[in-house]
Image 1 (tube, protein in one colour):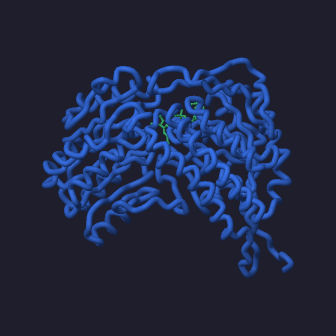
Image 2 (cartoon, protein in one colour):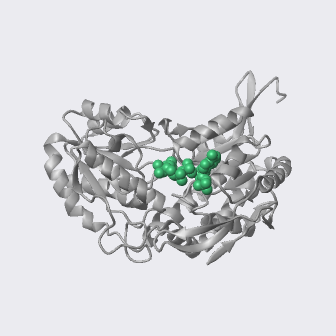
Image 3 (tube, helix red, strand yellow):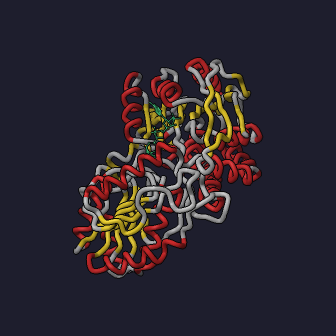
Length: 474
Ligand code: NDP
């Protein structure tokens, strides 16, 4: 059992002022794996006061001091590798391999990348007649979801630290323990008092409290569009700056000359990774009409490469995060069938032999029309849709017929068609074929997928204000 009934405020673990607690459930066993305190408005006020107190000195630290601090954090993070992997496996239900290859490594990469990006970052630019200075935005409130407990926290914290902004983090109550390890890492790395504050609690109390707090200057949020809208509303009261990383319904365009089996494997991988609980997952697979049959056969062929089951064993797909998420996924699968899409594989219910745990069947719908609910709404589970097209122009139009624009993917060989698809999709991040991840590249969405960019130097920019000085003595 992991219990942490304290919050981390002004460099110390302190008792909560409230008595309410929350039991965290391991989604693979449906058993309680630990308990946290549900913070109160008073706890949040204390954390904000601590961050505000830390602001003048932290914002004036040199670039070199902050680079060294981020490097120390990356070193301490590496030392906690086993704990991080085990914790994420337990609280999220992520298979160990994914906890290591995806979750652990993304967190590490954000801290080390922020140090690298900061080294080259210019905070002052002489532009002839005037000077532009980039200054810390102030105190930042960070609200993160459960699906990437180290990635989304680390990218926000690393960028804020690089920019000299003290933070208050409210992680999702369903996955709080990775954030507790991060807090211990910051303690070990000597992050100054008040620069990092952790208040556990609900979105209703702490999340709302952050987005409406008069002493918080900037809010960075990742999660659902519905909460994103509330954040915008609350932030408007104090004309607070904000960045939102919301949902997606990303397209994967399979070109005519693509290797059909590799494309099918990529499509399945999108709904296997993190059990499809990924904002940037491709969940609309656009396949040339003449390739439909061979693509469907290839999907069925590669599916056994992604075994579903106990995340502590050698599986690649774990359970969904909660009973609520499982119910949501089931209702979307029912909706798809009702709408007239054909089930190529999967369907409602639990996979055979996996009665305990929130496991869902990897589900692939074919004969899908892009205007169906299953092709328009974010399902956040191991469910994908195959939609056919006849020309690349048609594929690009289908790809763009969505309220979202977080990511897009294209697989094929012809360079001209790859370029045409990559530039034609209106989304914040396009991946061509099996290109490696790049943590210095900006991440964020068009349209209802969000506002702002994270990662690397673009991420640091979010935590900065721009000041113009005219007549600055040189
Ligand atoms: P939410 O958007 O509700 O939760 C994300 C974070 O926001 C959590 O820390 C949550 O706190 C917090 N929060 C909740 N209400 C408020 C509020 N009023 N003000 C400020 N913060 C708040 O996502 P869900 O967990 O409910 O997931 C629902 C759906 O959202 C998913 O099915 C998926 O479609 C989408 N989603 C998208 C994500 C993405 O990466 N873009 C990530 C997660 C979900 P707490 O949960 O502790 O109460």
